[in-house]
Image (cartoon, rainbow, N blue to C red; front, side, top):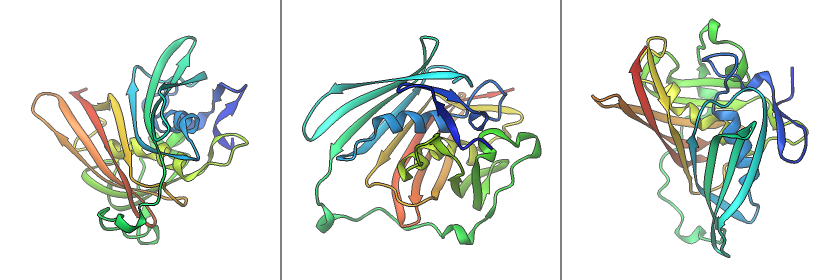
Length: 254
């Protein structure tokens, strides 16, 4: 079993392993691993990633990928950084992140909400046999309620079983971003064998750094009458909520 989603070829180039393969076909990736790869390049020990938005410009191929980064708006307290994931010169995924310098706000902290029941209270989430392998098998999935092929809201825990990049131990932040794109999948309101429900973007807001191995999703999806949906989730670690996500959805019958 390969130890990571990606193998480093040089400082900016990574070879995709079979763990990145999404459920739709052998040549394209689930968005979780490339999101975590870009966040890895955007992380800053002195600043918190307060918001990261990913724009999906096309399928991410299972291939050698290049990561480039830039600081778009520098600042001592707040800065805007970006990272682009490309294949053969074509950008497939772009992330833009607001990084905020940390300070002690413990006296006024609060309002994050109620923690999820722990992973020990959940059961293995059923994953269809023909969807085995790839990304879905590189993550351990537990269900408190709902999940893939159970239409409606879902409460799930997930834990990546491999590192993002070989030779670099996965961090709690990377674990979170390897999982949160699945909010729309676990809370889908349609049978995804009969309908497309594809997100065009992913926005993640965080109010503190995540801790531990497990990522919890309190996920829900709303679908309108005109082929557009919105998937949202409250994201948890074992200590409680850490942030929220939103995804716009393209919804069509197959």
